[in-house]
Amino acid sequence: MKLPVEKNQTYTMSITDIGTNGEGIGRIDGYTVFVEGALPEEVIKVLIVKTKKHFGYGKLLEILEPSPHRVTPACPVAAKCGGCQLQHLSYEGQLAFKTKKVKDHLERIGGFSGISVGYAKGMEEPWRYRNKAQFPVGGKTGEPEIGFYAKRSHRIIDTPVCMLQNEVNDRIVKIIRAFLAEYEIPLYDETIHRGLVRHILTRMGRRTGEIMVCLVVNGRKLPHCDVLVERLREIEGMTSIVLNVNTDQTNVILGTEVHVLWGKETIRDYIGDVQFEISPLSFYQVNPLQTQVLYQTALDFAELEGNETVLDLYCGIGTISLFFAQKAKHVFGVEIVPEAIADAKRNAALNGMNNADFAVGAAEDVIPRLYEEKGITADVVVVDPPRKGCDSVLLDTIAAISPKKVVYVSCDSATLARDLAYLCPKGYTIEKVQVVDMFPHTVHVETVVLLSHNKTNN
Ligand SMILES: C[S@@+](CC[C@H](N)C(=O)[O-])C[C@H]1O[C@@H](n2cnc3c(N)ncnc32)[C@H](O)[C@@H]1O
Image (tube, rainbow, N blue to C red; front, side, top):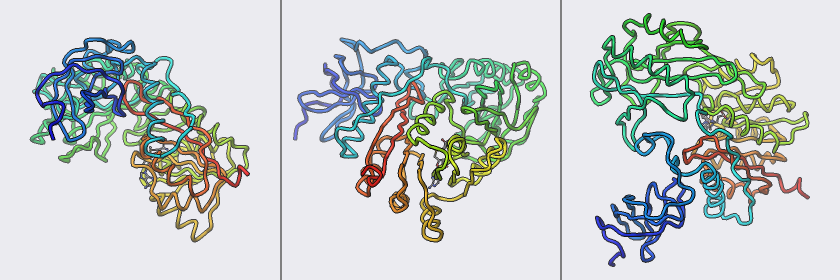
């Protein structure tokens, strides 16, 4: 069958929709074409680069009529760098896109209709929000390239400034860049697994102002490291300078061995009133302001009165568990990574909280076993799974435990919709859906859903 478009030909088309990855969508003679970088309400000139039976992909050549929501990206490398996908869309437009994305997934994948989706809670100042940066390092000896990977590749885009990172990173990177050049420190080349310095990782405590710098090296020592320490210590708030050893030929950024070059091995930060100790290896949410909004939304949905037992499944280092433990009788967290559970226990002790317990294991193993063997009960179950969503065995067990409320915190609205479609027929109703923008300028979106057990509604 002849398609209405031909590969390598240019066309003029109108963009009518935006896809879940931020790409513009339009039709040419009824044939759907996806165009990265184009926005709804735009008329564009497009080069068709790939065709399939029912749809194709185009390269944006020229914007003939721009969208009223199009803005000039604040970052000069936004189009090349793989970090941000939506800088060309106004922030208001991004929030509308994220709200629509969740609604579309609930309707198309979940099969729900008439669900009211709370408009994305955004940031007042959606720049410089990240408390963690990971910069790959490469280039020739004496001429370091430090920045971000280009879209869909491991080519480093040298980026002196990133608009999503805290300003202090610009200074840290400048100091390290000059040091690497001056002392001609070998820079890592992943294609041949040679060179020393692989990545720079920085973390900062938003409330405490404490800063950590971690250099990831393919070796055990950094030549002239005392000079670098001296220069980095000049930065106000510097608390921890560490080396992380990663000698493996791998895409995984961090190794497991950490050597303190100066200061402490950890920094501290707060979410609300709860204090956390963060090591270079700990998982910790990257947008502290919006993390508080996300957790507060989840806590408000749970409407705890103080006598509840809460299960926090996929609990990471126990951030939600400890946030909820302030208002609940008891919280039990389950997480698959043993180091994260060690952090969770340490952080519970740091905050003097003795109403939170934790267990290591896959939630879909631990919870069914505890239900079978001990008949565990819960008033509220919180789940915050990775992007692949919840295991169906776990959802079956949650339905059997039948808590009054389930609060589902999701970083992928497609798997969220799938899981809700599985759980709801087992006795639950969607009460509230709230979108939270944790990652401005990217297509990622967080959603909090409150489900209530049908028998509590009667
Ligand atoms: C999206 S994170 C949420 C972490 C935490 N709630 C937070 O807000 O920081 C998902 C967590 O689930 C953990 N995880 C992945 N698969 C799991 C499983 N089958 N059972 C329990 N935890 C799992 C991951 O290690 C990760 O810490």
